[in-house]
Picture 1 (tube, rainbow, N blue to C red):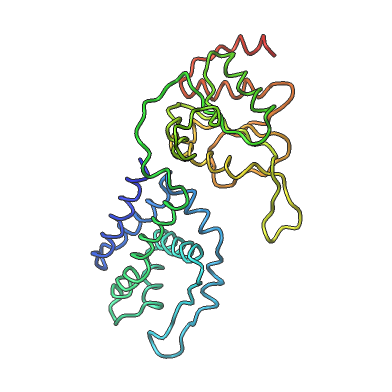
Picture 2 (cartoon, rainbow, N blue to C red; picture 1 turned 45 degrees about the vertical axis):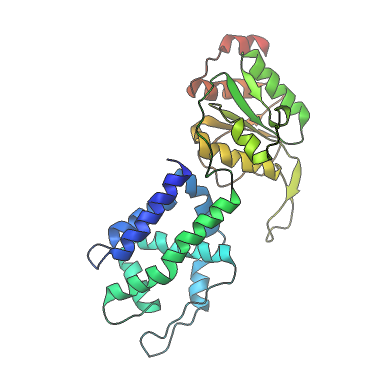
Length: 302
């Protein structure tokens, strides 16, 4: 599935939910939640929903008094928080359609019919969410939605790297010893392209090796100590190749103690060691992805 088709699935589910009645709203609701879990959208959805406290959001909203229909949600001004809260509503509703029904009746009361609350919630929350979520994803990774289709060259391996040139050169030499061509972005001609355009133009590979080296430090606001982490461009390119190639065709080599990104479950993380055991582990991943690997050459070269 491409990013374009993932958005089409999302939009179709919202359209179906708008037209649903009391007996049919469950199916499009579950389709909507499933669309958010598509590989192309899952990382963004999980990142947005992890930033909000849904129960606190409800507690701080106006529950209403004795008058039916007086309850009012206190939405945050921050667009990312609004998206995250809506994702949780969709996910909880898909897991328990009765909860979704009761939630709509309480917070979006529109008459005594239960379906009326669902329709009002869909119109005022879900439909705008579809528009705003698409815009957020496209602004976050603008290169993804228009990526041209390219053939795959199983002689090439893309190498994503940070500031550690020694690690980059060691990884590149290892690939060359296997008769493979390491593709390193800054070594490729620019031809007037922006960096995202250049990344797309050179991504006709069947596998990507991402070097997570401790080039930067950072922490969450709630943490007290900064942790070594990879550069942000490395994490962005990791996400790009996960979306383009799939998690099984991306391998991250982690050097020293480093904070690992939490949104890329399923990506192979291999510890970089001076003894060179990482070479065998990486070779296995490349072999599983369809590359011709000479394991004897690796063993003799260690």
